Image (cartoon, rainbow, N blue to C red; front, side):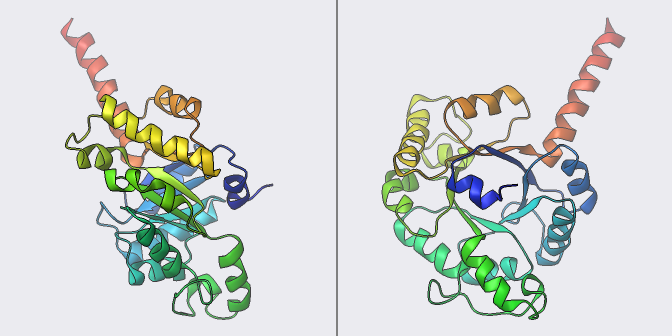
Length: 256
């Protein structure tokens, strides 16, 4: 079976989802759906580093890759998330070549980076450090999030940074940076998204998108547009949408 890293290198389709509920049961339920990877969101949730470690353990125990969207492109949080055993990181607000270089340097050990050495869970508490060093170079995933118009404008330089395994577009922040938060259907927002997709194709870098809508047709559309690294929904969106739609139907019947 191909690893997630191999699939990204080959630009093959891979679908995951987003974890914002900081409880292992949420992960276990989501694992039943057949996702290849799950992203623990530390940027927009109350999930702290201890909770993240428990969620990573649960995700990996279910045979799924555990990625973490860190709170910012910052050395300490990236180092901690990797030391507790994340299979990869998603870096928010990568808006320039310099941002992308920093992300790689914070994630990799010298000579390819500047990450400090901590003998913790990822290296089996130091027992497997040599193996872990090799794993970092061969299997660690570094995904940059393009979610600002500056990132779109600098996409060509970002994609040329060695060590970047893929991109993922954050539609809410991208549209917000253009002055229209949540207005994805505007022509100028669509044009910005398309520029990222086109450049990713040109440089043979996987292009990703977080389709927060739980309607599968929206995800299918992104596949048609050429996205290969796709996040589908959010854990509580699936629960929210089914509950709301179900109750609407029940109330409609009761009031008819």
